[in-house]
Image: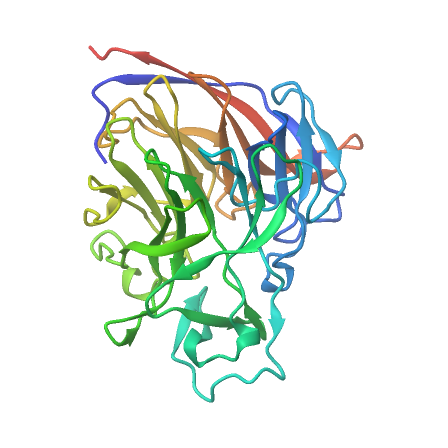
Length: 402
């Protein structure tokens, strides 16, 4: 990814600690994976995971904190699956649709596989951190195994959230058993497109052209009826650069995709490959036909998990990602073809004991965004090392190159 012909100056404010874990909480999972949202009443919310990073925690409510002063101070709230103004998923912020409805993701609790009438043989085995998980064709499963794709809707002018199941069409869809649990699918991230359509961007294994895709691909599901039904819109199959990544053939595939609708009308996508084989490069691809087709993925950086992007109204687009470390990167290029060098938010640790590198961005104004992230090396009042969640402002200004 080449350098930008213009320069963007990034200013990071001092961090504000949102929540601090007890010092004995050091395992992977708790006080990680933050999400940011502006709630229907205008308040800002940080949500974050406080359970193990495990399928056994799917569907449990995140912890959350609320700010009424643009992120300067935060007040922890009760954990609840559904409440007044509550964002219901740490991964995807509620969408405010053109008709006034609010839409949020609901993640179902997984079902113990023991006792379910599963097919004798799976359709294939999905990869995840050197583990292999059996996957079954949806049409081969009994009715109690075909739930999923749940949403909460807050209709325009109302204050109550209503639970509903979206109709989702994915050719060759499969369901996976992980940790002896049948996992029900959910929408990893949802986006409101410029044309008013709702995009759900996931990574999936499926059966394509009669064969099970063992390495996951980026999949776009698109809804033109306000999130009530989603159709398979496009896919980026795993197409790695073996010269850039010696472990390319052994990777899980493209995971944790995210998209950004760019100022020039194109769509920019980032894709993770870091997995049990170690740190892998992050790829980018772009679409100039509203996401129906994509360019061949190319290297964006030599690392990156859970990338997130935000197009500010001043024409600058931000990207945040990391592991090890955490970084923010900017481009004034309306197509996103040229990016500035990355700016460090959290210094990297070779043992990856500094941050999970999952982060979230929320616009504050045309030039500034709020960034939420985890920090594993905070200190409590007694000086003990603690994990925690922090926020800081990211302000950008453009400077012409010489």
